[in-house]
Image 1 (cartoon, one colour):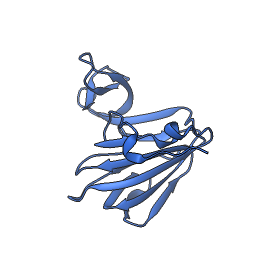
Image 2 (cartoon, rainbow, N blue to C red):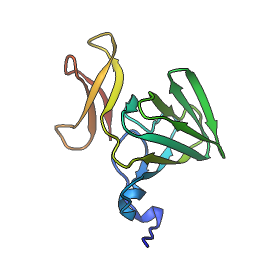
Image 3 (spheres, one colour):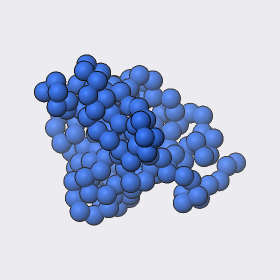
Length: 155
């Protein structure tokens, strides 16, 4: 048995104020499990994305999250859950004023190939992205795969 207190798990740098990888702390092998807190405008992910080999489930503990999906926007409120099949594009964003608290589960734990898409100002369209550590080391950045332009910075 493994046991962990959520507040004792270090938060990871990224697009959410708080992302605590509980699965890693617990040593899970078959499922990814993360605790999130999103302030207004923040997201679970670096962009509109899909995991080729992983399904994801999000349970919203408090607040409301708007998920951009291939079928349009879907709002998931406190006490609700949503599932995305492997290969299904999505991005959850807090479009409200209330802080969101949510739990994310992914199976299998390794997501396989992930395609992240963001608007590239230089290309003038939504393009595939890669994530790198910023030169100063204080943030992560998303970069357009087509032209190399920085499309986002996440402290």
